[in-house]
Length: 615
Image (cartoon, rainbow, N blue to C red; front, side, top):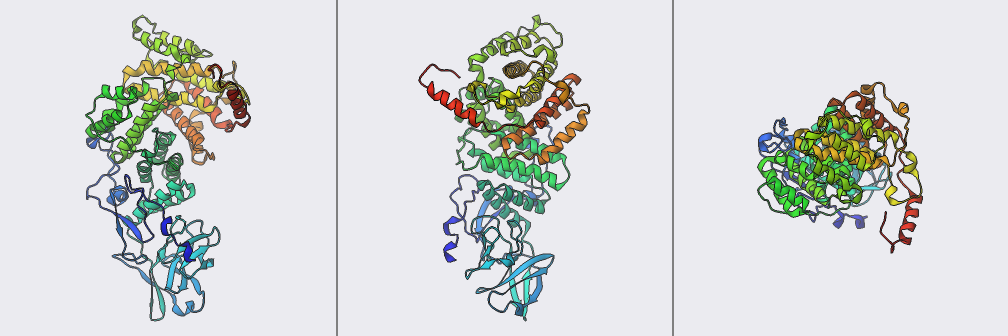
């Protein structure tokens, strides 16, 4: 089987920036050097984190894998240097006499397979690292490659290498003394194990191998008790692969980490990390690196907002980097909010992503703040600006008229004031309430968006014909709630942005009206015990069962957005509407593929391709 030797098939391990071409064979490992007081994954305010946020001082051993990585060669493939060995007599040597001799033994709590080979007696875990098949039942060739026949995986018993780049097999040093087989079952130092697992996790992410990602995260958790640090590595690995910046994967990671920090059980914590890392790997699959623009400029908020407005990604990135160097995410926060709300853009993603970037930087700290922010700058700069579409022409007029608040009545608005109104009317009504408390107007608009979700005409989501502009689904409606939550979080910090945030919420209310029925069945979705229902909705996320990350992340984001608004004291009528809307979303099947509609629209489009423009 010598023709199956790995040779050039070993996958790349990208150690930092631009190391894509570094290919390592089975005998190479990685080491790191970390200072004695390193804080690699905290968020100390004095080092650029958010002011007032706590500092997480991680143990040196737990953080070591996320420091600067350098490579070194092992002197031998199977004899790991250890300060402490744990040699145990495993079996009589006579038991392995004869052709193809093999056996299993239990040593030091481990189930080990022993094989007689031309290179001597070799030992490995009997459980295949893939799915646990007994390797003693496998086939061994003359070059010490062992085939597990369950899935045809092949391992080198000398060093544990996997021919196909999958999980490595643990092997053990063996000596024969006085007719006894002795096996050293001492574990590798935690630091070395962590580095090797980190390398293997990156390989799993490159392959988008969800199940292997789970196993590698489990191995990290076995060392550290928790695998949350793997999100740092996932962000570092993926940030430059997103050509147009942030995706839902990073937004989802922020929310999954919120749930992670609330939970106590290892299985629940690992679920959160797996979904975060798995989504990042899925979105970055087969994407090359698109290097961030280099350089730095002193941070100037107005200059930054102007650079984003001009879609000058290079300059916006330089200014953002200067802000991070000067004061971390806090220094950039208001400028990012201003840039996100400068237009009704990206279907609300711009502000949602800014809000989640703040959460993610707060949680992960300085180690990846620059990656998070520079990817966000790309997303803000490239976002489509929907307020430039004629459909939303009234937005700019309403925004220009907002400053004359002294002439507006101070009566409190309600969700009923915005029911069944189009874009122009929704903007006009929001403008008429500009003298009211902005938090009260926000609640009314959020309640109106929830009412739209309850009134969503599902026949519009399942139709098989009609114009492209009529394509609508649940995610069109949920964004109104997640955007609304981001508006409140951002504008309470920066009140000058309330007019833009509220008017853009009105745009959501008006645009979705066309896809609603006049009289929804509100009683069908009413929730009597809101607290109990929200607890069950959050619990459902831990086994959501949806194979598409784009769906599961919206289940997550919408659930947590509603929970967040409830915690902020959303008034009872609006709270009831939001929870009922969430319930309908969570309990309604979603049609994800529209084959007939796609074909119908393609044929119609091609037939009119040379005619007047329309949607």
